[in-house]
Image 1 (cartoon, one colour):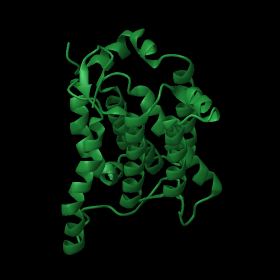
Image 2 (cartoon, one colour):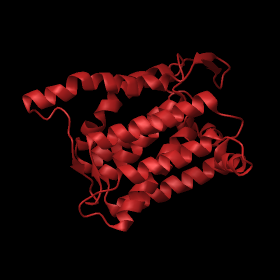
Image 3 (tube, helix red, strand yellow):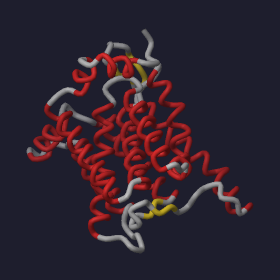
Amino acid sequence: MTRENFRGAVLPIPFGFVVPAAALVALVILAPLEQLTGEAVLRFAQTGEGGGVVVTTSTVLIYGLGVAFLGLVDDTLSGPSRGWRGHARAAASGTLSTGALKAVGSLGLALFVVSGGPQQTTLEYLLAAAVLVLSTNLFNLFDLRPGRSLKVFVVLGLGLTLGAWSLDGLWILGIFVGPLLVAGLYDLRERAMLGDTGSNLIGGLAGLWIVLTLDTTGQIVALGVLIAITLYGEFRSISELIAGNSVLRYLDSLGRPR
């Protein structure tokens, strides 16, 4: 399975599948190690700053594996439809749209994994689900140049970690973040393409990190930013915006082969 990238280079795709594969293999060691030693190798429960959403290692695995699978379906079976409007038109006409399946499937996963908090209000529930869905979709829009989605994820993770002055987010997401950073280097160096499998997973992890770190007010602000960038990406080109700004263009090109 290969595809041409933006420069016409033919690369293997979807390389993003190695990230959940590596996470599952890691569980062969990590799960019994925690059970048999009693040490906190995996952090099984962490309450978000909002107080209502409980993010667990099981939550991360369910959402991560789910959105990666939906991305894999899109990588292997996608048609010509692009963007929310294109997928909506395809679905309305009765045509199979893997993008529509990905959107609805991501929504179902999000509504499931953020439910069940002991003090969760309806606002916190719907807000967390919306952040997850929009974040998962947005990183597909970023993934139009090698390494771009990974760079945005790293910057976001650093900002959330330093802002909260806590490594809890990195710890609980680490089972995916470790292999993601390695696979992302192959994407950045144009040796492989993560595909929707990888970008979906990156977006899902970013959404979980936001929900885990920010309180309700912060999540509302994050949701507004996600909506604004998503709408811009639907009607304009994010790549053209970056190309037209010298600073963004330089940061976007860092690490890629000349």
